[in-house]
Amino acid sequence: LLQEGVGWFSGRGSPTLDVTVTVSSPVSICGRVLDNRDEPVAGARVSVFDGPVATTDQAGEYELGDLWPGTYSLQATGEGYGPTEPVYDLAVVSGTATLDFYLPPLDDVVTNGGFEAGLEGWAATGAVTTTVAHTGRRAALLAGTAWLSQTVIVSPTIYSPTLSFLYSVPISEASSVFNVTLSALTETVVYTPSLTTEGWVHAWYPVDARGEVEVGFGLTGPTEVCSATVYLDEVSLGRASRPVYKVHLPVVMRGFAPPPPCTELIVNGGFEADESWDIPLTAYPAGYSTIRAHGGDRSMRLGIEAAGDNVESYSSAQQTVAIPAEAASVTLSFWRYPVSGDTAHDLQYAVILDEDGQWVDTLLWDRSDAQEWLRAEYDLTSYAGQTITLRFGVYNDGTGGVTAMYVDDVSLRVCYGGGAQ
Image (cartoon, rainbow, N blue to C red; front, side, top):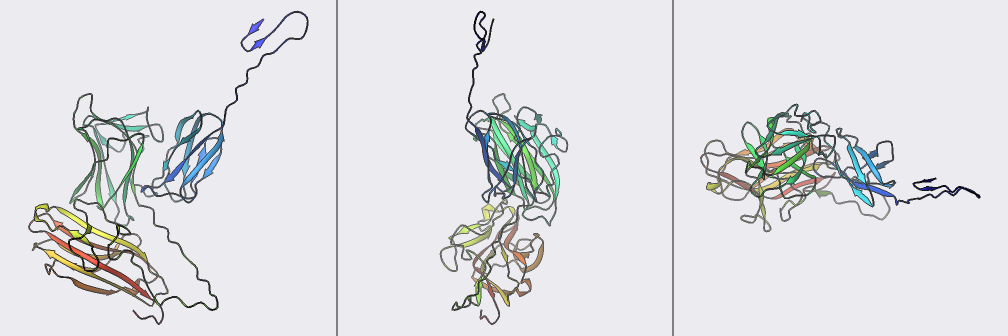
């Protein structure tokens, strides 16, 4: 008798068994776990169904090693983040497979952002596919002039609201445009993510509007068979993760001089570098400028100075600082150069937000055409022990003249007992 892999020989002697053994090298899965603004999530857990679990390091990286070649389903979770669907049926035949996860915020206001319930919660002309998805079993499919939209309520207390989503472009077309819109009562902001990408791409945008906001996704361009195709998954809108502050505990040793009585909390207050200031993306955002400067070579431009650019828009820049509880005095100072040709509704302002993003204090509320550098100083000692956001901004209503303001040499000086400012 002869069977595949086994030989039997009749007659004298013992039977012979032929066995073929295939030895496979182990495989691994690695990647990162990130939040809705692509920041790493430390301490997140990535688990294989009925298998091992890995925990991310400070860079958000994980690795699952010594796996047999095969197909795996995985899920990522993180304390303080919302739930996300598993990644199903990841085939790992050899070597290392790379897989990144993006955790949504706990306060996500989007309904059915993973499209696992079809198009429930969405107004749409698109479709849902079960053949392609980043996580879960489903994703939305946009082709031709298809669109999806959902109206959500963005609370004024949300910290740095962020729209986050993943998309994939299996078919690109040169004249097609992928439009992502945020429509509020006073303005509509349009973003156009690239259609020349490979694989699943994570995109996020800041949301300045509060209250009722319509989130929309759609394609414009040709409607024939050769139009672009976009898969959309994991749509969320909620708070950004708060920054992590490092606390250094003092060590008292003999022979060491005491620390200086005053310290500066603002980073890059002269705007000479492109860092530390958060500039929300609006119809006409703020920006670093070399047109005017009080000290150094640059300042921060807020608003619109060219009449031909007049549009309804907020233009703001902000920085978040933690003021020590032991501060004896806290003094904010800055220089501003106001310019305005409007007489009605445009506005130049400086305000303070608390750690939840709520407006708690107004420092400047003006519409000035002084066209000279003016110094301002405010006592913020009452905010000792709090984390605040200092926001400078200009509002243009899109009619009449335009309004701008340049800000430079911003300082938030903290002094301790007996320190001179």
